[in-house]
Length: 233
Image 1 (tube, rainbow, N blue to C red):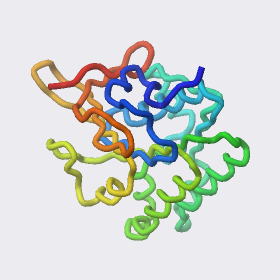
Image 2: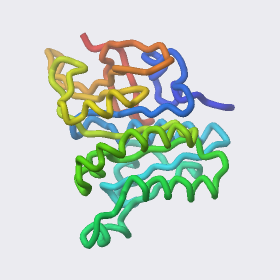
Image 3: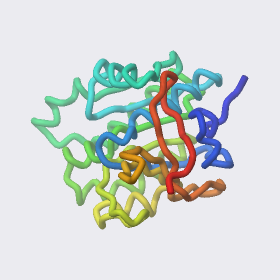
């Protein structure tokens, strides 16, 4: 039985009423510890498990082993159709030369598409890591083409970006405005403290061509992974 992306997380269809259009580039933003990687990996794993398709998860911050340990601790299992690529073998090259990571990432995507005709999902974890080992001004000039190339490849893409967001939802620093303008959607994760204690939340700030709720909804971790509960007031 096939599965839509909006049904890959328990409760996601309560805030995302239409399917994410194929080929969209989605930013997944939030502070440290807000389950950005877990949300994206869970969506991709559940999707490829139910569909005859493949996904590619590229990590610049962790090894495959470390990433899988973190996912297992959240109750999220890797599926055969979800492939993980890390840049561990290239780290020495970063120290010795200026490696064009966007070009390299596009080459990695092409190599996986050659192996799997039905590669439809892509994730990069994270944009911050990519920028940190590259010249920011040069990278900014390449971001537009990178986003366009992902769309041309027909990949529904999730780009994870750690960001310091103000308490007023939707107000981002100048450093991150370019990505938000270029992206087709923005899913923001955060932590909020109230009378009921500290809670994680998810909020869809933008999703082109798809209807969605605007309120913050509680995000929890259960025995079966990530769940989305009701709105946080």
